[in-house]
Length: 260
Image 1 (tube, one colour):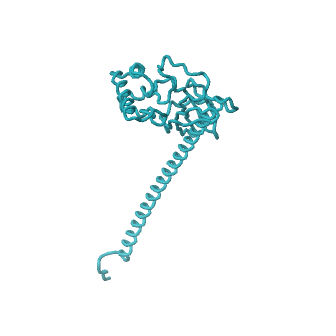
Image 2 (cartoon, helix red, strand yellow; image 1 turned 60 degrees about the vertical axis):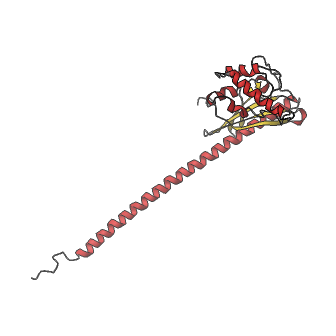
Image 3 (cartoon, rainbow, N blue to C red; image 1 turned 90 degrees about the vertical axis):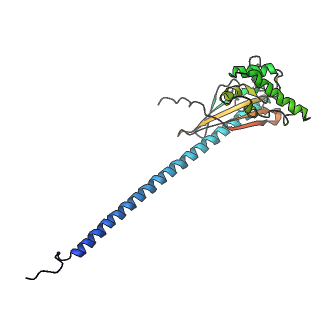
């Protein structure tokens, strides 16, 4: 018998081609699977991010609702009108539930703090020293210098034209690391002249014309949290007025959860 030219088995070329096609198909399938897995992972991440954004927005809305409710309650109490119970003025949290979201609101009278626009050098230095500043007198001098500059400019004193419209406007006058502790002792909306943190004894009940710092922190059932703060003055029968909107503020420690 004669030999076939080429020395190969019958159909060898077709077998090689089929094998190559199978390997290519497997590779393409693996690539599609990897792509699908990546898309699934990305979509899950997008869904999680969207859920987180929704939760944060829900917590922020509840916190703002709690803050406005507390301001309205303080105003109603000061005007001797019926309304929800106002939060205590000693900073103790008042719990409230809004659409299933837990809200805690605190209130403090600004009269218990040192007023940047009214306090004298001694009071300013005492607040700075209590916050740990190495040169408290320098801070007091810087505050008074800014107030003198405003007076020299001939701008009449008013709630809308003061050297420090908010506490935050004094941030640059103190070391950054000590500013949070100092800011807690200051206000731009007090009414006592002079007043020290130790001597000031704010009224135990809301009073018209006084300023109050409000802070509301909310936590959703899913664990999303948000906190907002503002300073309001009570306008008697006219409700309240926001004199300083601080917006989002750092979160405090989580509220303890009830045991199951």
